Image (cartoon, rainbow, N blue to C red; front, side, top):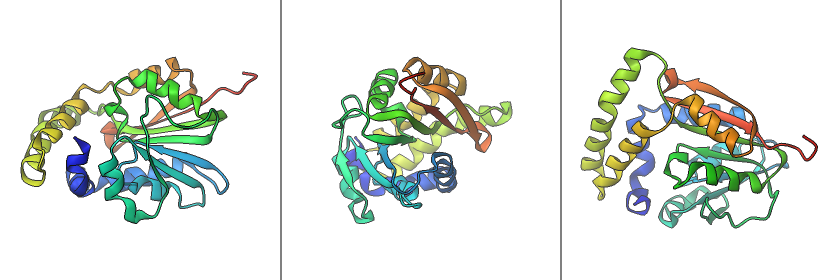
Amino acid sequence: MFDDVADGYDRANSFMTFGFDRRWRTITGRVLDAKRGEKVLDLAAGTGVSTVEYARNGAWCLAADFSVGMLKAGKHRGVPMVAADAMKLPFADGSFDAVTISLALRNFVDTKAALTEIARVVKPGGRLVICEVSTPTFPPIRFLHRKFIAKLLTWVGARTSSNPEAYSYLAESMLAWPDQRTLGEIIASAGWTEVEWLNLTFGVVAIHRAKKPTVNS
């Protein structure tokens, strides 16, 4: 499905978010705070637009995605890329200082299992940063968001994509996604500690961050 929409995905994403996706990436990068000498896995990175953002301070950032079509669409970005299944990552234990996922965790077939597998490839004391759709905290905005998001995505898909059904799926997955606290509980149940979140744009999206326990904790 993502192979089919790869070529126009970034443009459609910016259109559907009214350009807020750029700001969300910038803030996610600040929360991640990747430094020179660190190794960061940008999982479900799509075309690598987020990977470029997270590598700005000199960290080595690897874009990984299940969709080869998305990776091919972003090969011009010049960041290292690899095809990978989040449920069975092709990396050794403790390979990365941090893992980040931007607006893609809801596409994983089993959220808790994926978060457990991600913890395996992160060093003890390493961190997890997730930017994902969430539940607006202000009731009027929550009402409007739920009422119009499916219509907007369906409209965009019908006019810009060779696979309109993909955008219907994206709308459904957004509306079915758990709220901030529930996702935090899922992250904690997968073995992560110090789980906290930050609402962006009234909670339309939220950034969750957590740490992998050290050996002695």
